Length: 305
Image (cartoon, rainbow, N blue to C red; front, side, top):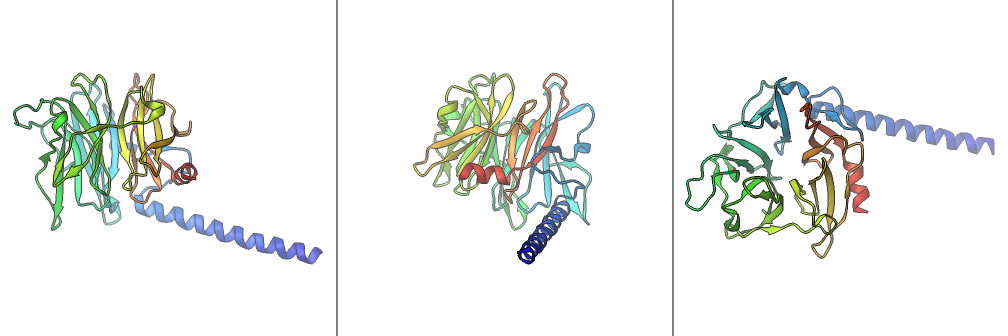
């Protein structure tokens, strides 16, 4: 009997040691991948806060699909100028920040890559110069061909030409999700538009039953369109997750954990490996914002069960 117990304990010790080594190796690989000293678990931590000048605010952070570049939005504290910057990996280190290749002299924000890395969508106030299109935020697109990015082009969504349209996120099928409002930011909510023969169709409002009467913004749509994360607008911004069922309905909707929803959160983004959630958070009055990241893998699995 005692011999059997010793054998069981020995097996458990071997398994525990193996799992510990595996976890340690995984953490080290993430440190190499993101070029950081600390990897978050289920408690969010700031990501490269040193990128944010003391007199500025950070609003969003996303990676290119191959993790070689990181793009982030910086604004002044009066929200008058939004500029997108990027850093890239060079010889095992992050480079000095520079303005993103698609940044303009106007306001630019809300960038998002397709999962294959060949398309980039973002929002901008640059002139459209098309009759009937209101001067405000609209969606633009750049495509990568032969390793060269094209000049950004305006995305025309017919029933939104007089609306503010921002923060696009794209599925593998090419469907765009984004938030829409009047030009004074009233009646903000999330819409989607499908491409047909190269042209985007009239946008449809996102129907999430539990949040039908709640304003929503800054959506992240999973590439397979099986879940969406967005910010609900109330006394503060809270991050909400919802899953699409087999009938195409959004269900199992809930707030992300309290460890994530603390001060006011927006601009959610999931890394291409589906491991980490990045989001902007901070006190609106103090304006001490940061982009934080957290391991979201177990939360996604739990919600999908």
